[in-house]
Length: 260
Length: 275
Image (cartoon, rainbow over all chains, first blue to last red; front, side):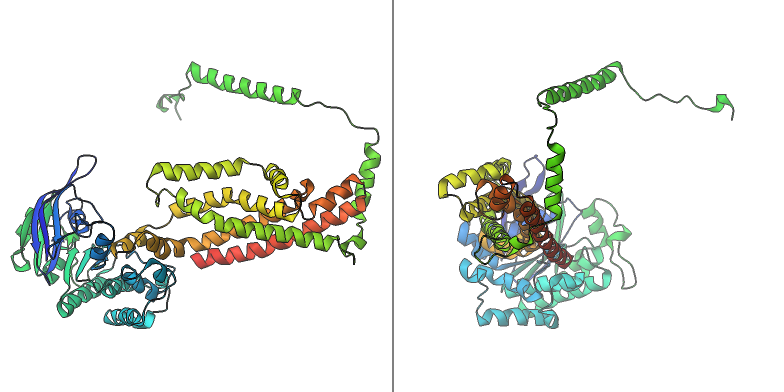
């Protein structure tokens, strides 16, 4: 369970990123956060694993405060949270399996990981993670030889190898075409359902949010303006979140429709 | 076309003070040149100049081939081998010593400006030091010979390598580092898994480039007594044995060309592997 208690974030320039957020996300939920760019979606997501620091309030994960965690404590909490990025953030010159094993470094000593001495269970974890996203046969290829969708699936495998209980995905499909977008979203949903991993995804496609989310959170100007099941998130609700009618380029559309 | 249809074309703004500034700059430049030339004593050309020039060229075009290999040692091949060894050993030392400096000087890894600034300053300090001066200091410290040359090259190369590598690190994609941080990796693990694999091709390429420079440098350093082919070259020059000077210069040219060629090939492969 992830709990936000009166969380605020003010950027050094005075811009308000998050304004007094109270939020509870239960284990196993598939939450999609929607909002305009700059509304605070990314800040909200990245404050969970403290890639972004908050200025006041407290964020608790399974009852433990990550806000006050330091050093090793913080790293132990982070290794339980997988993260998927818009730009995949793989080491392009390294092999796929080495990228997946990078998810294991938080479990071992610095020296051991620098020598690359991962135990056999770690290798098995990495390969089964790759199998889960259908990338097993690419294990020894270099990451830069893969397509965007394949790279994103490798980064999902990295989060799985971490044995994460939570996966945060920050615009995971923003640089993918419609077909691979659905493959990646399908992978995320399957993992959420089969392994019970709490999944929180930032999206800007309205229809995609409705299709995959069990719960939608609408963010506007650093505040939560909608929080409810996907079925309640009608076009009117989205217009209210966006502060204007939903435009066509915020729909991914069917498989034939070209995304922007 | 009628004159009246042509719109009034505004002349480029060139106020009075801009023109004055141009003239001032010109005057300063001329003054600097005048001062520089007045400081050089032109002593004229010696009467024997033509004879000496002829002797030099005669020597250069009739190299002393016997010097290439002498059974008792102290020959061209051994001198060149020592020169290359000095360059290789020195470069190897500097390649390792560079790593901490490069990391400390990278502003994307070291957030505290004071620390990265201190490393940048040290690197520029090393760069401004001429290698000949450094060699003379090391000769005083460890005595004349190849070891002084190795130390000179090892320390002197850090200046350039550290700067190039830290700039390369600053240009890297920081996404993977963010991902590693999010996985719970500590600082060293992040550098090892996210920075090092990205930085290695340019790191090796800079090292090879510096080796090329150091082979040339090692040939010169011998002239102040830091080992290598420079010492016999100096003796040959002082003894006016021009045919020996010729063969030594030829040897240096061949060595430098070979090293440049091999290193160029290797570096091209590294760069292509990067794409």
